[in-house]
Image 1 (cartoon, rainbow, N blue to C red):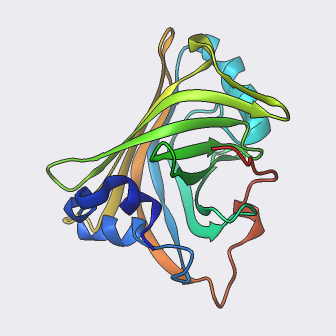
Image 2: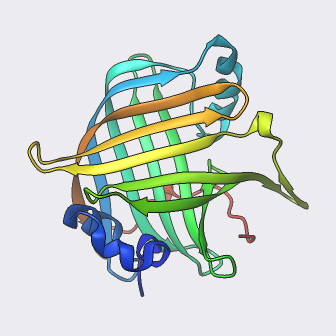
Length: 226
């Protein structure tokens, strides 16, 4: 079984930097997890009018309004089968800001019908977005989110442009510094830049057969739909 990123990228997966292939190449059957620790040089948000929107996101661990520099950071990537038997990959990011801890949670699954990764945001998988991946000439990974949908009991609807955002993620490996570098920008099509962060981290791999995937990285509720 291939990992989600290997499935999505196909032959281009082999063009990733070897450390990125290792980081994104494991599956739930490999008994491995990947946890990164580092520092975000800068966390930023858009103008003041974006603050209420970002504050609302804190209720479900989807972005936040605080800004900062040199912020300790953790990212937890675990692969596991969800309650519907789908291969799932976590992207749980924790930011240790001066006055509080914030999280930005996501879980990814593969939609075999549309052949795309679906990125569920937050603790209850209310927000879903397709992910489009590409590999650059240096072996870095670029992710871009597509149409966002709201999913709840009996509800599945595309969000209006004013309530959506496009996330651009660039992750690469810096051989000279021996670290992963990441840059994230979230932009609303009407209002412009909303949220982002940039920094570096190192990773360690865990044996999930000895220490199971922690419940803290899993969503409180899972959506059956892709």
